[in-house]
Length: 231
Image (cartoon, rainbow, N blue to C red; front, side):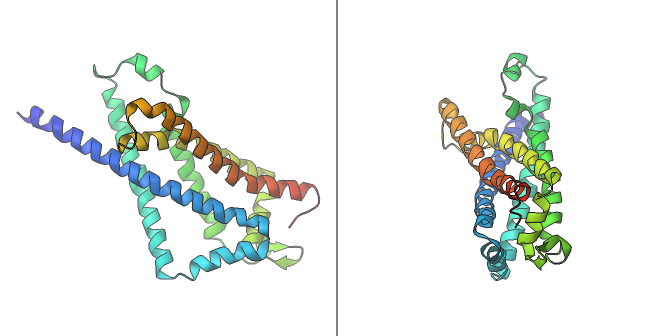
């Protein structure tokens, strides 16, 4: 009796987790586009770039509510995704999933957890470098003048090592998104399983746009630095 009643419960629980992972994933993707738009302001110069975070901070409680909501979405997304991955690994031992099916999975699908961990580790480092660190002093100084966050970002990415690490992390983000977005739209019922191929193409395009947008900043700074146009 207990076995019969627990199976539907497990299915419902799994479906609820997938739904939550999908919704939080959408929230995080939307944040990435907003964050990318803010990053691209660096091409407009220090004044415009620094005005963007100042505008956000001026929103006060609303800004902090958005931050807390984003952190909550990230924690929920990571914890539930890990729970689903654990359940999936257990399911591979039963008769409902063959080794042939596992072999057909794309690298992006097989390494979802790994790329997610890479993204998490870099996110912590990213917050420490740009959000939690001081925007004054030597790290913020360009041409003998303090440039605030603009200077911090410029001096960080003028170092090839940091730029390459950032681009490597972006590769992990793009790989993660290339599968995750398609999985989300299928899970939420936006598209049927038959249209998964189209969702995959759309997901890869979105991942590519985000990768190019974010990567353009360190590439631009490195180019300007090594051609004598720093800052």
